[in-house]
Image 1 (cartoon, rainbow, N blue to C red):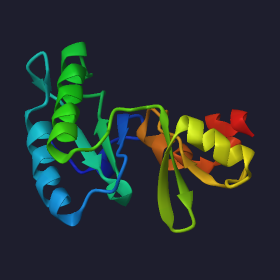
Image 2 (cartoon, rainbow, N blue to C red):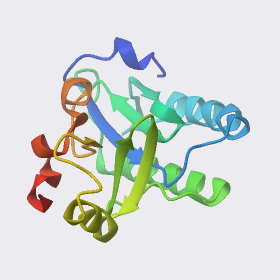
Image 3 (spheres, helix red, strand yellow):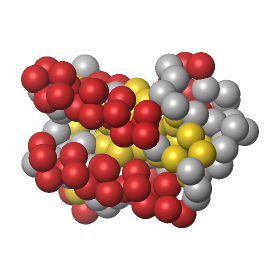
Image 4 (spheres, rainbow, N blue to C red):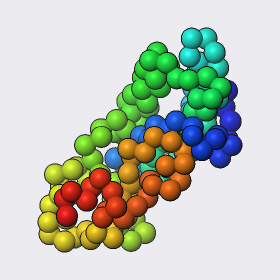
Length: 160
């Protein structure tokens, strides 16, 4: 059951998929109906899942699920991963590679392999105040408050 992401409770479970590049406007016009259809049909053991999504910066797909209604099952999580894999294939993007870092450079969003990001830190091309995207957050509330945070406050701070 598709609902607006903002209407999900703060303890809603989320999954964040970062793209290695921004989606184009044409791609967004195609992806959003695909997401709508996936979520409308997303179930766990035959029960509808109350879920929504957002696509911040045209670069992330964030799925949210109200687990107070029905919790995700292994099969429903697998279904979402298979759906994301189909988007990767169709749009030639990487969405499941967790070994990359996305961060802000001024008004721009940068995406680097972890090894390259470590070099940027070492070379002081990024600072402790650089905003990084903490894609390890698990709830809507964590997303709202702990997703875009300074490098020094993130798990990335071990590279400082």
